[in-house]
Image (cartoon, rainbow, N blue to C red; front, side, top):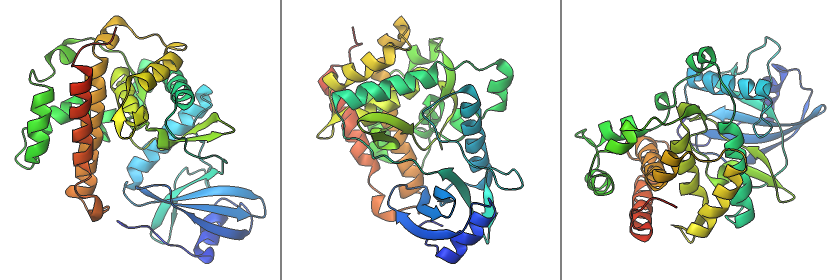
Length: 317
């Protein structure tokens, strides 16, 4: 299912019946999503978001839904909680398709601005501040099973199939193979892995929902903050200091940065760009999720180079 999956009201009704959510009245395709096909479904009992997986396998989706269920139990207010089928499954299977259903939440992705960056920073810090026991962390998947962290990046640039421009530019940015990062004792917890501003919904200028936990897992909090800044604090495609400061002001009202994280923050931002760049390579260049985006990874490499030059490669005060 590499392209947008189209369904009709009859199939939507058969999926809805797995949840006993009434009769489908209106079915409307939504443009949001790369890894999923999304539909707004109005039934006699309410309005729902129906998602069909285009990219993840069923196990990965079940792991993602397990994380969302755990977040609900923890009282995290910025994530959607998946509905369960009548047989208590978080992932439905119907006629060769599988996916999930959520209650529908009204909202729109914001544009980058001081206020939105500050609220997104606060939301991310609330996620990072959740406490997980050793047992819980062992039960939740590791981020690098679904995302591209430091270890995967360092390994990928040594592979024969790595695009030469990716390899060269990564080495320019990290000529010491991230020695200080790897030696640092960085705090870990549940991370989102892909919190760009367009993975949020705002309503009446207030953050309502953080979306798409498909790369969530146990990982380094600083890495997650770097990813978030790299895709949120943007003006005309450039990562700019005033928006970083706004995001950090929201973040640090909840979780003040330890000294080592502040020192390595610029590295984290650039790592975030290379991480999502590699995600695009795997999905679009090597994969067939959207061949029109085969070269889109280059945009993020250029953004990383621009940020390195504009920041001077220095740690933030």
